[in-house]
Amino acid sequence: MRALSISSTYAALALTVAGALPVLGCTSGQASPPVPTGKTDFVSAPFAGQSGGSFGASVSGGANASSAAAAPAAATSGAGQTAPRTVQETDLYRLEGNRLYYLNSYRGLMVFDVTNVDQPKFLGRSAIFGTPVDMIVSNAIATVVVGDWYGTLDSGAPFHGSIVRGLDATDPANIKVIGDAKLGGWVQDDRVVGTVLYAVSEDYGWDYSWGIGSGPVAGGGGVAIVSSGGVSSGASNGPSVIVSSVDFANGQIKAVNSRTYAGYGGVFNVTPNAIMLAHPDTPAAGDAGYVTPTKTDLQYLDISDPNGQIAERGTLQVDGVIDTSGADNGRWSLDFADGKTAHVIGCGSGQ
Image 1: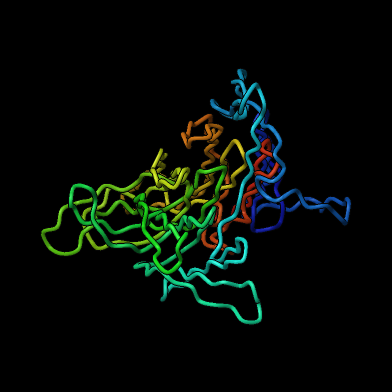
Image 2: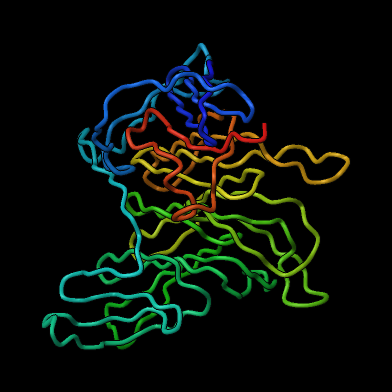
């Protein structure tokens, strides 16, 4: 690993999954070298997950690990035929055929007939309590991500967090709930690969409760999501970033797997076979309590299983702190479009 100081207050980090880790860093108070000259134009990389390229070996053991695990195999279908797996963005609206599906914070899911775009016709709606975040629609089944949701677990204990809900809108005038998958914390970002929704969320580790005397509720579970949010006061086990997966195949909603890491906030990039998660490291608390992070943790996760299983393939820590509160919750501070190299922008001042 090598470092090059620059005058900017930000550090640009590049992680090569199969090799070393070149770093561009910055620390305040250091002399700045001459600014290098080079090309003045560029071509942007394909949007995250759209390149479809394979990715390399594990980074487990650090950037200079001598051994490399085999790359995960692509999903197959039939007699050795490779089934295409693409990454899809979720959104607040979807157009499927002549129907428009629209999520609204006050009116829930609404369905319109837009055969005549100049005279759209309202067909029906499903009320959603909480804050609708995103959705995807397939064959009139809407898979909706909802934050700030109150309900109960199967045990009857109170729950406050995020959920993934399936809504069957085949008959828009009679939309039916087909299932929920509960997620800890507050959902910030999500992607869909095949029939699996991946999300990142933030769980501050507090006991979820509705009032005095209510019992604790465990967090986690389900879809790959990045989130950040609060719950009612209670004992805290420390903040955690949760990456979860929820399978919505065949009109069913099923929480599959999750991975939890200590820290505040998280940014992830998703490709057809892998997730790169970046979040500020959580240093051990000092005598004075909270210690400001100075590093970023990277988790390289294998999601090649079409059913939503998540396997950790490597971790790495780099200097500089990624901003998870910027535009779109900091998603543009991490790039992993080619599935091989992660580019991270993090603040390096104050080190």
